[in-house]
Amino acid sequence: MPDRKIVRVLIAEPQQLLREALVALCERNPDLEVTDQCADGAAALRLMLQKAPDVALLELDLPELHTLELLSQARERNCSTRIVLMTSRSDRKTVIEALRCGAHGIVLKSGSARHLMDALQQVTSGGVYISPAVEVDKIFAAHRNRKENEDPFETLSAREHQVFTMLVEGHRAKEIAARLAVSPKTIDTYRASMMRKLDIHDVAGLVKFAITRKLTSLPGNDYNGNGTSAVPPQVMAKAAG
Image (tube, rainbow, N blue to C red):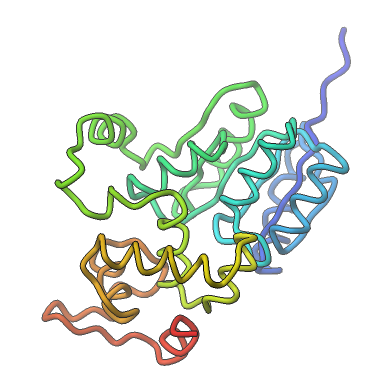
């Protein structure tokens, strides 16, 4: 009888409590072994390149090096690790960009532990997994058939989408530049282009847009529906930087 193959797992999640919960969940499965864990994207990429785990379970919004940039760099360096992303977002643009950058699986945080185990099993077997709650057929049909002037958000480039995501989550421009491994001046260019496409000209407007579209982890009930939102002051202060 052949030996059972143990799948080596790397977990990257900035919140320690959640990271420990994910480790415990994976280690309940006798076919999984968590060989490494970390809290940021730079460390995750380094471990992937040095130790080549079979699969990496990554939070979508990792600090230090943004997760989508991590995916791009891993692919450029021919990293063999299969990658599963964890996210609270199921919008079309996020799913498309994650898969385009090299993700092999997308698991919604609102899903069950069973979904996570299914994702790890399917991805390590060479397949692609997307959480059942994501309406895959509709997403890809809309992506194939969309007209560029139909929805300005769909016209954002991959970089503009990343900058948008981090701005509305409250990250400073200098921090975004570091996490995308580009200069602050380049981020200013992406931000200006993205705002022009969306016809939104300040960070408060971007946050309102993100909340109404459910494109952010900020509480949706902060938006009151009449054009104003209770954006946390610390978010505004950071994003304006």
